[in-house]
Length: 288
Image (spheres, rainbow, N blue to C red):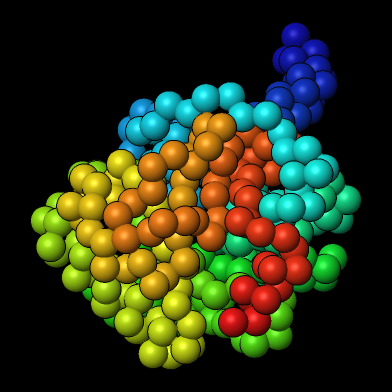
C-alpha cells in the first residue's frame, strides 16, 4: 500500500500545482483591474451624483447639471456656411477623429488645456494639433477654479501649458471657462465682488502677456448669480452656453455673442458651437 500511495501522489500533485498557479495568475489579473478602470474613467464624462475627481471638469459640465436645454436640431449645411461650426473637447473624449469632423463641416475647435494650477490635459497634443492638421482654426481653454488659486496664477499656468496665442490666422485667443463649480459651492465660496476681482485678474494677466483679450465662456444664470450680472468685461469676446434653439438673454455688458455652445449631443463629438459669422470672419478673428 505504501508503494501505491507513493506512486500515485505525483499524478495528483501536478494538477494541484497547476491549479495553484492558475489561481495565482487570476489574482494578479484582478489586482490590475483598478488601474484599468481608472484609465477608462478618464474617458467617461462626469455625470450627476457625487462630485467628480479634480481635473475631470470640462466646458459645459455645469450647464448640463443646472440648465434644462431643449432639443436642438443639427446645424444644416447652409447654416454652417453663414455661422462657422465648431466643437470643444476635453480629456474624456480621448483621441478625436479630426478628419471625420472636418468632413462633417466643423471648422474650428477649442481644447481644454488646464484646470486650476494642478491639472493639464493628457490628450492635449492630439486634441490641439489635430484640428490644425486638417485645416481647422484651433484654440485652448482653461477651466477656472477660483477657490484653488488666484486669477493671475491660473492665467500664468494656462499660458505655460498650451494657452498661448500666435498671429498665424489659425490660432484662436485663449478662453476662460468660468461656470458652476462641479466640485462644491456653485460660486466657489466667493462673494460677487470677489468673483469679479478674480476674473479681472485672470483677464488682465492674459492680455498683458499675449496682447489679446481672452474669450469668456459662461452661462447667463451663473454670471448673474456669481458676479451680480457684472457688465464690465464687455470688451472680451463672449462664448455663451445655452442648449436651446436660441442663445437667449446674454449676460450684462454684451449685446451679442462671438461664440455659442448650443448643444452637448452633437454627432461625433457632443459639444458643438457656432461662431457668429462665416469661416472667413473666424480667421480674421483668430488673426486679431
